[in-house]
Image (cartoon, rainbow, N blue to C red):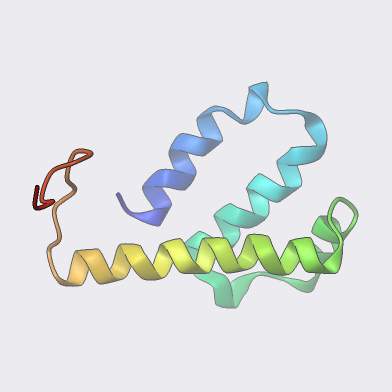
Amino acid sequence: MAAAQLVKRVGRFVDIIEQDVRPIIANVGRIARDASRVSDEAFAELSRHLNEGEIVEVTCVVGLFAYLNRFNQALCVEPTRPGEGLDS
């Protein structure tokens, strides 16, 4: 699943998420769509809810999953079910 698709799915559930989590979800969406265009204002909004270490952690997780997604797409890796593809 592409990062943008994931963000759209997550966005559908934003209404049931607590108010103070919304800026985090919004920032994840910005990073997933185009990390080079995340504004200083977006990070300032995020810093009202998370400390610097937490911002780094969230950004790292988003970047890691974006990397894995691109890797899997480039190699046409198909998802497997739990336990599939393991030697017994």
